[in-house]
Amino acid sequence: MHKKITLLFFVIVCIFTTSISFASEKDAKEQAFKSGLISAYGVHLNKDQLPPTSKADLTYGETRKIQGLDVVDFTFDSFDGQKIPGEVVYPLGFKETQKYPTILAFSGHGEMEELISKPKSYQHAGAVELAKSGYLVFSMENRGMGKLAGMGDHLRLDAVSRLKGGSWYGDITTDALYLSAAVNSLSYVDQKKLGTAGVSTGGALSMLVSALDERISAAYVQGYLGTYAKTFGQDDTHEICNNISGILNIGEMWDVANLIAPRSALYVNGKMDHFHIADAQVSYAKIKEHYKELGVEKNVNLLSPQGVTHEFSTQLATDFFNKNFK
Image (cartoon, rainbow, N blue to C red):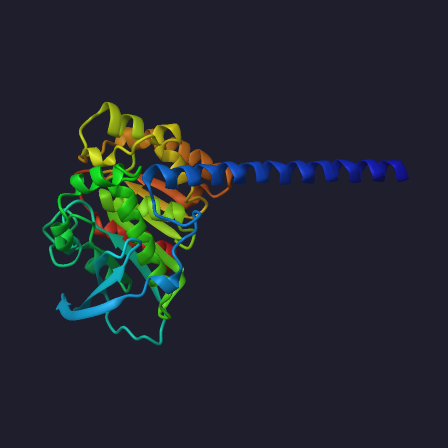
């Protein structure tokens, strides 16, 4: 009897040890990919560490009313000292003594203002629409666009960044991580209910920031999911800023999305979007498999709504965050 117990104990220890070893190996592989991703994009992080909240204060400016909500301009200093403009939309009845579910709404190609006061744009004033549902929403300008157009065309900025092994996407992803650091320092932000959202480049930022910043608990990614090899390679129908040097030596887009797991993510590629649903389905199959392995298959989904082009679906985004945060 004693021998049987000893043998059983030995087997349990072996299984437990093997499980720990497998988990450690998996974590190491994931960390290696994350480091490679940061390097390939040229994200400006010190030893892969997120920007500290102490270095990302927001400086507030003018206030205006849009659809009855307060919208306040702000700026923050990014990794290179560049002042990045942004806007925060406050939900109705906002009080600093309360905590609010918060969304970082990233702009696509165009200007941040499309998320704020231009409902007829392809971004459909998405930040204001989300704030109308009770969310505190922060947006920022992308380098070379809108209020930062004076820096030069974003493709020129991309070319300059590539001289140092970086990219325009790496620069604006870093800006977004500095914004996330600043937002996480605010007392009225519910840090357990922090989301990202966007379409096109905004969708890319939503995915990348959520992959790198584990404080994000839910990501809405529209008009971006595909594969690096086909969407930005074989198809050759998208701007070359999307072609990150050496990225395929690191991994594929589904590997980026898998860094978000087990947290909630919704991917949306409309039936009429030029980010084709067929490309998205290739990546999503890998993403779904990974979530299933983790036992959280319900935390991820891919939608392809009829009649939707390359645009921000405000109602889908609102429904997604309501499901996760309310």
